[in-house]
Image 1: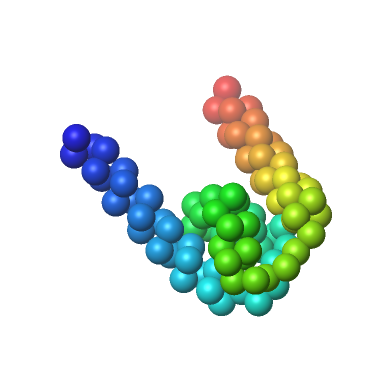
Image 2: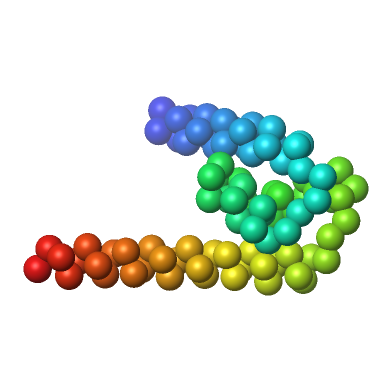
Length: 90
């Protein structure tokens, strides 16, 4: 039970940090949404909900595409980095 409570506490702190950062946002694009996700662990779906509540309008299809592009770039860089480390350790 203590592990579950610890995870709940971590998630609540993540949400608090992300909410603090998202309050500063006046406009959004996929890069900003990805930065919230990468830097603060702020889930993309919650970012969209908060934007709706703040009446920040955006093209959700475009935002989704931009976010996915940033996520894919990040995955590619991570993959290449892992391959390089693996090659160097052989």
